[in-house]
Length: 301
Image 1 (cartoon, one colour):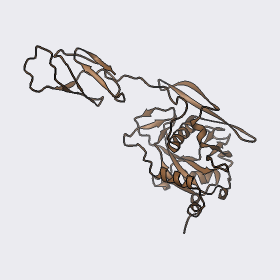
Image 2: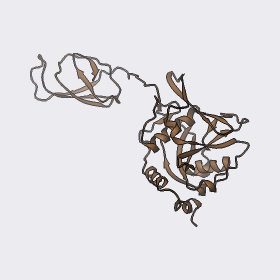
Image 3: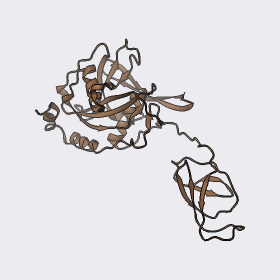
Image 4: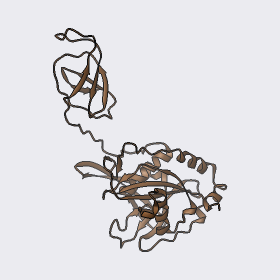
């Protein structure tokens, strides 16, 4: 039987159809095994607990793209009263399917039946403050009128929606610098007002929505998203230098040699070199070009 989502596609705007097609082509970069933390940095760990949240997008009356959000019930033990995305922890019956987890939780929390949502993309998983692996699942609600919010009072106090593009703008946004895990980070707070209520969207929810908006609109936010981390890896002295057809080791030579730096993963051609043993401070592999001379430490250009 054809799902409600499939039936509504025929009446969807060309803009929404194009967006769905674009998002279906998105491939999350999970090959490194790293997660995006809720404060914007990668953590090379694999948490045992998994969760998924639903970023349910639909077209508003004015043609703008909007996302469904909730305000958590005040009686919850964690994050009570905060704005969040529908979602929760994975269960055995989900069969390791983040889409199933996100849509199941959305139905339990706000009465959004999975048949109304067309899952189109999975973004890079985020690492929550409590070390929970959270996967953003992007879904399209083709027919907003078919959804009648019925919040579960034990979990959700209110259901509302907001324009997705606001998470790329510097308007109604403020930030706070904090220290977490020995590093400085930026927490973003977005103030949003409806006709009768005021909401603050921050923390993991804000970080995920900034990422989703960047993917959807194909541009970065109009504000500094995170504090750069200029951490230097530890000193490296074990370098492999391959010299070819060079006999006189008492003089500097003017030929190119391959320099391989173990953990940094940097392969660089450099010249001239001398035979003097040296140590250097290895720079981060993200920096595009590193120039080395055996007489002195490595430098960035």
